[in-house]
Length: 326
Length: 83
Image 1 (cartoon, one colour):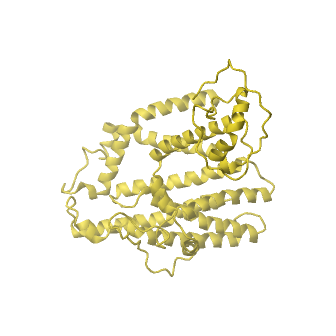
Image 2 (tube, one colour):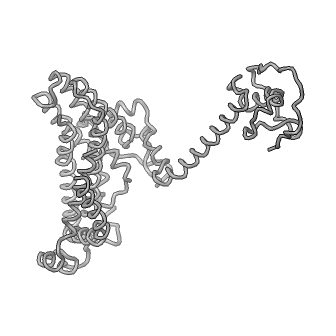
Image 3 (cartoon, one colour):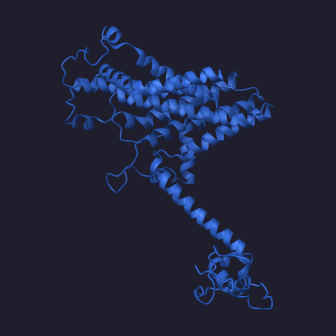
């Protein structure tokens, strides 16, 4: 950075027209000695005339696509400051968020296609005719399952996230249509959804610990599976509100829809989680640490099946009822 | 917002209930401690549900004792001041 010499009187120029052509001129930046670098930190009124000469080159070089309006040094100072602040903010985010959340693992759950989303929604609402429920392994060998775009049975996070947001908006919309809208509804609904997911995960984790189920799927898989119930909840609430004329989810239509979506969701969960929570026979018997008697492993399997059934049906019934009650 | 406070209260109260039980006067009588639990053959403790629950309860008691003291004190102050 070159210090300006205040002692000199600025040379007398005609005012140079501040006209910069919009074609980006890719010239190399002017050398330091001849003209002051427009780094922005030394932007001051004393440099107006010097800057005017360097404007076309520098403006074309750094801000070519912005056009004409970065001309005076205060705007350049502001843009430099903005760029530095943005870069620092991105670095801070990268450092801290990467520690909390596994971003690359999350990206795996958001690689969805339109056909996948439509088929998966149909599957959540009508799972009785679907045949193979196993997830396919990635061809790399041992490093996980196929992403959602290649495998209809793979859980994704796109549908659960969208369902939760839609659920919050739907609640607020219905409250508004009934004339009972308050801004706290957004926060309360969000916290209810969050509380339901947390309760479900706590119960699932306690159950897997007590029953000694060593599942290979991660926490994000379980969060994704617990988010699929919101699809059924949305369908129940919206259709029952339309049919019953805005009087809530009670009545025949509401309860029928609730029972149907609850059963569909429970079957979907049972079939999907069967391979997650109930280990196959060969895996359990080859474990050297556990010398499993065949009778014991059968008792274990029945215990785990009961746990899966209780989790899929009774727990989901309770949670869906919490979410759909008016 | 009140839902989060209610959830917090429920979790703290449940943990309190598990932690407050007296080990020698109550849990030993009902054979719910790691020492008094009879193992049938002792080969594979991990496969018994009761053993896992006993382990869970005793580890919750050990780990949550001191943080629960702090959290309970904070909640008491909150309730006293803010009602």
